[in-house]
Length: 324
Image (cartoon, rainbow, N blue to C red; front, side, top):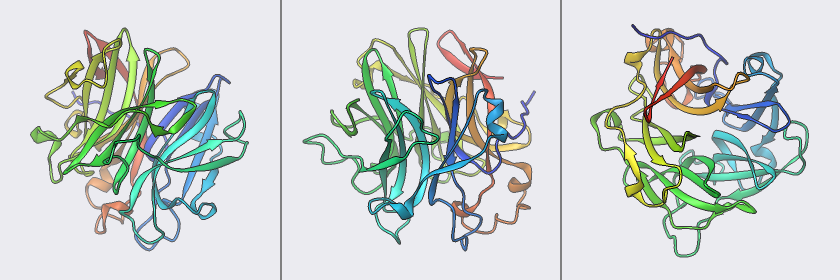
């Protein structure tokens, strides 16, 4: 039987939820464009906070940073993620390096100058930089960066054009998390049929660490109903920069075929809810959009705002992941 869920936060793609030590859940996501002629959208980083996950749905949404205030990052800001790294709050995101080129996209970072990411000011740290000797990373098309800490080491994973959109992994120093400390390792590339529908893509990585295992989800294929979620796993104490430490599932763990009335599940994040249960926050399109009745289906999907955030409970069993 297909699973059904309701929209959590409407028109917010690439949703990310993080629980802070202050007891608040923080939510950010891509701020959409409503059609190609929209003069706003993809131009800011928004943030909500609430004491419960469900409270985020109606929480006040603030703009904590806008591209007009930066000389380094321009419009087409995608997939922001808020993280506490080395005792400071950061937001990782993709932005254009030029004012008029949507595809001049690379990973960028801003830092909160205080301890309250919702109210304190943010400073632009610019584009991510690669370690010495790495002539590949962040040179022309990178996006969807995430961060996680594992066994005392700090990692970033991101998508980059390496012939296709692939996912890469590197370490960082938490005191200077805007640059890598190891050359990029190719973690996963689109190789199975389900990763290559319309466009061969791996992107949108998200990590969950539990029970001695690292679960790294990623999104695959083009962003229509074919969009889906794949999974890689590794032992928590393994050398994560050694590809042999990882196992890639040969089938996706969530697709449109698993769902009722929603299409193209992907670009998720993981967080524990107030009951201590792992949940996945992800985006998908609704039935109206799938049927071409949303008013945006005739245009470029880049300017279609109809991807909305939803939530599913995560089930971890015998080293595998599934959802309720």
